[in-house]
Length: 118
Image (cartoon, rainbow, N blue to C red; front, side, top):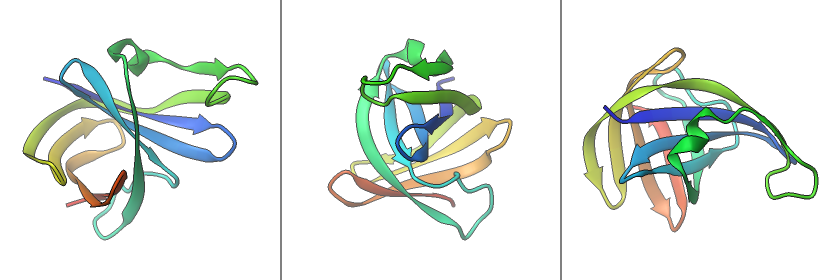
């Protein structure tokens, strides 16, 4: 089963990086606020570059002067099961320590998505 990880990233601004294992890489979205655990809360998710699978275990500090400089810690991690996969919508079941249940990513503008429990 593919993995997911959410990394809490203390960069210029605190945000959360959602990463889903797909096609041999981690597809990634930056979420400016804490990911929702309950229905009815929607979060902006900005799609970012893919990361290597090995990045799923990364915790530490990205040095000053490098892209994404700041502290990175794993906020949640587990497995997921894809339920729907379209160009503008992903629906999947997360099985993590903090987030569990069916979640959606819905694209509303180039590179911009909504992330919510659906």
